[in-house]
Length: 273
Ligand SMILES: Nc1ncnc2c1ncn2[C@@H]1O[C@H](COP(=O)(O)OP(=O)(O)OP(=O)(O)O)[C@@H](O)[C@H]1O
Ligand SMILES: [Mg+2]
Image (tube, rainbow, N blue to C red; front, side, top):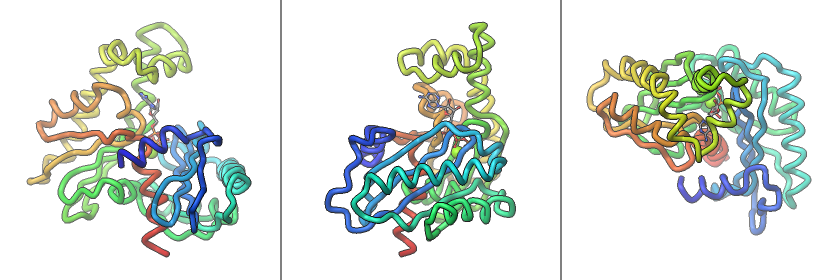
């Protein structure tokens, strides 16, 4: 992950860094979240070649609330990729939060099909993340914008999931309240790596609350080796340390946690060729 993650972090939203040289086939992974939409293009060997991320408001609490908007956005993103690429991009994958299958699987599939993509796979989010992480016995905790998703992995498979309505938005609200500033200004401070020490002092209680939720979910499961933190909120320096301390289980954060799930979605295409 760290090589792919580093590559993604430099190429995302930088078309001048997109590189399709030598690729034989291309696949698109599309992740529609509450906070952002991301499209990652990988080649036949799973190497990331291009990536676009946009703030988006087409999903709320894991459900697509603006179908037409999502369709238009994914259409624009894929057209941009196609016009940069010497090869056609005709196949892709997308994903959904666990337990939203009924409402989401068909909707996300139609959104990709509307953009002219043949849908090769629609894994749930933790399964997509684990395509990258390769956990056998452990847990994946995805702290996104609106929610925290908890998935227990045993024997390499997702055996339990839960979802709680606490996420990055709540951290931002605490920063806004603390500083007496508006939401967008607080969001800027929260995501500025130079501010992480100060931010951590303000948001520690929210992180501890998230950790307590995770602890409660994991309690029935014995023998979990480790907990992996993914999602944008885990980018905050110091976040994983607080969670590890509360859980007492080895807790690690891949180098670029916000790209883990979307990369796994793109890579899931390689399994279904
Ligand atoms: N460097 C950073 N430091 C702290 N928080 C960050 C950073 N980068 C992004 N975030 C936060 O991560 C959250 C978004 O996470 P992510 O991109 O995983 O969400 P999403 O998948 O769109 O949403 P959800 O999973 O809730 O549907 C936002 O609250 C954002 O402020
Ligand atoms: Mg998410």
